[in-house]
Length: 288
Image 1 (cartoon, rainbow, N blue to C red):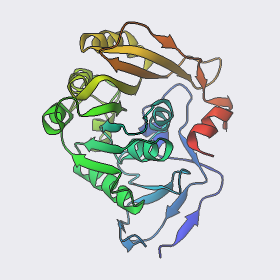
Image 2: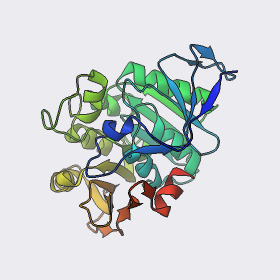
Image 3: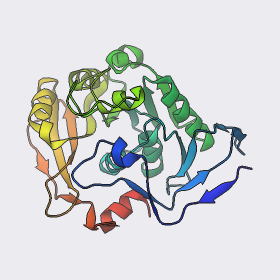
Image 4: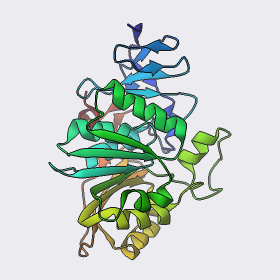
């Protein structure tokens, strides 16, 4: 059995910077539990390497393998998992799944039939697949290594009722490029852009299928224009504010493949009641 260490209090995850969230949101994970051992075969037969850690997800007893030296999931992914809806019997695809956080959380929160995560970086896809195995979810979640730009060829037209994505927010050279390639790919539109995501999603969604994305408000005009161009009609939007008196720094969007024009703007989602103290809804989304 691996040695398990409980880290008391609120620890700043690498996600504070890694998620690309600005404007006062700190992505913190409370009561993180880590495995602090070297190349240990855990009870499920899954290897956890010395540079990796296990984080508890507070959902169904699930855990996720992450590498702090690469790109750890942030609050944006967790909020997207709380915003997306997957109905019983539906199949969902997560584009750019990273370490598989969104499929794992959606499996825990919804009654979807099956979840697929597509990730171009082999190292991240490997961690995602090991997390799936660690949680005994092989029959519910499939991790595929591949390019978003070729996703519709791999999976076929009309393959999914739901598509989710937490894509790179920055255009090309916009923003500071991180020296670590994995982080640059996650933050910047290096290997895919918004057009690639929407084009492939439009092909893979069934008519009436739903598209869910978390992004930055400063690109909203572009996002809505391109969604409509690819016949994914914006239907629901929720802005995320770090504090009640600050500007929003995230936006959660739902689109409908072939839908009619009508957008519902939901009440704002406020993250912090005061510095270091989440609003009750945030605790609910995280599962505390």
